[in-house]
Length: 428
Ligand code: FES
Ligand SMILES: [Fe+2]
Image (cartoon, rainbow, N blue to C red):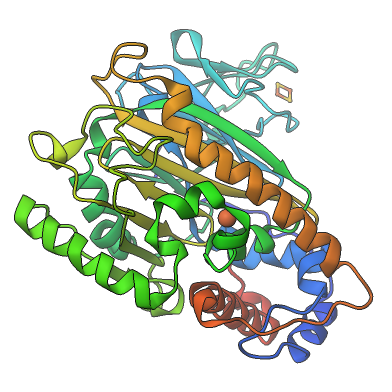
């Protein structure tokens, strides 16, 4: 199977674009989105088909499929994808929809396809780990299995992190390699393993989740533990000197991490959005842990060096965010499920050679961001409850919410283009 071939997507009948056009007409630049963007199921359908599915999304880490036949599934909206390592060691992404009558094939979140075979639980059509249909019970002798391979979607592994896209013509990945890849290489994520995974279900629209992630205006009131450790939660006058000291320390240590910004609309047309930004930890904290002390062995280029007093935020596309400390990493996946339902999955990474119980404890590695995410779930759901009110009126973003404003501006530009386009221009 040639993965370079575009995926065949049966173009769905999209709902009317009139609600979207009306919502766009009432959008005020620099303000939160009008209510319909956070609750209208038809706008959610447009979000999925024209924005989410046109981009790249992190689905996990290559260490989650170490051996041939290992797979995991990833959900995005109503789609489910099988990420499977083949007998040839290659990792592929296959749509989890049987080519017979459409059943889900893999029903477990993580598993091993025995002998590399994926067997549909309905009538047992059997596929190999490239997606080829090998066996279809009691079909005529001349039945041609060739056209019934599982549909592939494009997949890239960047420094061990696995990304997929549904787009027939995927967005260019160069910015991702240049910013995310640059940082993930220095942090050694290609040689990482998963220490812990956790899924949070949130009763809110996905854009309230991503907007919340993109601003730290809420960190002071909502995240006391995070704010105690990260200067990023403070106003610019405090941040700038601390960040300058951290950059100085990076130079002394020979760590070549730099800010690289292709975020949102600053990505060139046709390229995926990606960025890397650095920020200082507050004096006394060497990493994002309960007591500020390391929770796992150094990763990547930090091995044999010292803590730099900082950490990195990395973003790729609209749903994939990452946080990197010298001793552990965090993948933060936003998963839109319905107009009022979103999941986020957190995946913590440590050095592949670190031994659980000896070099690290999963609960210590995950403590800070688990705690922070429980707080985020609460504030995001309160946000949705208020946004649902007949009295809700979008208010202005403040300077500390500039990245959330950039994100919304990017989304609005994409949806405005879609609203005025013909079907031939649609993303899927
Ligand atoms: S739907 Fe999969 S074998 Fe019938
Ligand atoms: Fe938060």
